[in-house]
Length: 279
Ligand code: SF4
Image (cartoon, rainbow, N blue to C red; front, top):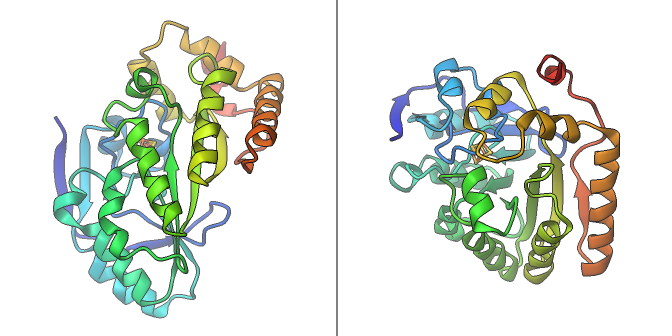
């Protein structure tokens, strides 16, 4: 059972440190989708929400009003919606905080990059246009059973495909975020190929990502890990250069086979935060 709270904020938008976006906008704190690999808890200042990831969602009830004041003074740029939560929380259907923010960003001519797993983004199709928007949808696997274990409260993969299909057809730039690719969970050539094939069919390019491990996300993964393979083994593998190169090679092969642009969102880097865990 998710607990919902509301707060009033004094700041709506922040500078982003992510490549390709200038600003980050997160209308909610926490995320009901509850993906077991999520590393947003490590970037969430409300530690109660972070440690109970998926169980508490805090709505920034006045975010749209604050945003309107802020954007009047901001240099135009690309706004990532959202960066540490999914902007289409189930409660968004009622609260419409993301929707109100999108309207304001459009009004002031900001570009908007949405990333979600939720079909609720289709509700806002009346606001989305090809001039200002790109739409990204995360699909880690096309297999329902694996997706359910990884992302227990997110809509199933097939319904996420419908989002890409719909917006691509409308001429909006769409991208499929294939990540994280987790050793022995969703990294078989067959599973990766199923996702790349879908991207080819719906006309999206792919950004793929490795497993990112941070201290809080690791503690949550240890608690929730539902697979037979040992987590330590998965983490160890995910951080090796050989594994990185293997995935890049598979994705390059699939990219050529299906004529889909596949871009890694990462360079090889060993995550220091797992050193203790691997001892
Ligand atoms: S949808 Fe995104 S923000 Fe939400 S739990 Fe999953 S990975 Fe984290």
